[in-house]
Image (cartoon, rainbow, N blue to C red; front, side, top):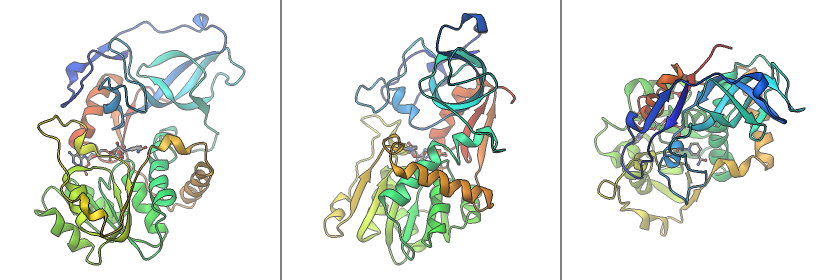
Length: 340
Ligand code: NDP
């Protein structure tokens, strides 16, 4: 099976009609040319950044998907055959060049071997993967969050948010979060957040943030943008920092529905800094090794929890991706493709 893009979506919400699930032949070992690998996909990652790749925009930081070609993204899989000296049959690999196919042939660029450690492979898309490192970069590298400060985290139960909550808590911050259902709010509190609220049912957002952060917000970890960012701006303390990670509320916006921020002027009297970032810029820096060391130790000591949200079957991958933009995932959304 292969999941292909039918048509780019420049604005508005993508639908299932933008994807085509097709039966394709299984690639054979004999078809490998030099320096190639035959990969059997275990899990694929469904991530909000893929919305940008569906838009055909040329100014994105990752290449656009191409109509008629398979979707490409992060995944984990097993090497079934290799003509490269870097990989051998049986190696478990992860990387960002996974085709949305059950088995595919690829060059080796973009793949790395996962060490044998007893950690379930899907975790390399979550707690030891890109979303978790994103939380680390935002909380630790950029916001330089310090004990005693208050951090506000939106989409706090999600792939990135749940780690941001726990890394901030481990550093002695007061952690407050928002999420889109009562179950998600309860989960965020179970991770150690001092307070959390359901932003869909709370009424006035500014008042809801003030209620959980009466002394103001020193760090806002923004995953959603839009109206929530606007309300957060009203609650920032002097010299506050905004780690601008994502604005998912705006990814499907059209010219008519895009939210226009009203309170940006607050950044002057409050001397707020807003730091936009892309996690891929940080893999080559010492931060990455520091992240792996810290989170691996937390995992080993049972000091970090991570919720995966698994959709089974490649044919369900398109819906699995679209769900993210409606908050239908609860935790890190992965697609289970074949058994380990
Ligand atoms: P999540 O697992 O958090 O899933 C997305 C969540 O966003 C949904 O579950 C929903 O949670 C929330 N959401 C969806 N639509 C809206 C909306 N209209 N308004 C408010 N909230 C909404 O995804 P990730 O953790 O993978 O990603 C979180 C953010 O981080 C995204 O903005 C993403 O683009 C960004 N990101 C940025 C990276 C970078 O390098 N800068 C890297 C990775 C992610 P709820 O039910 O709580 O509303």
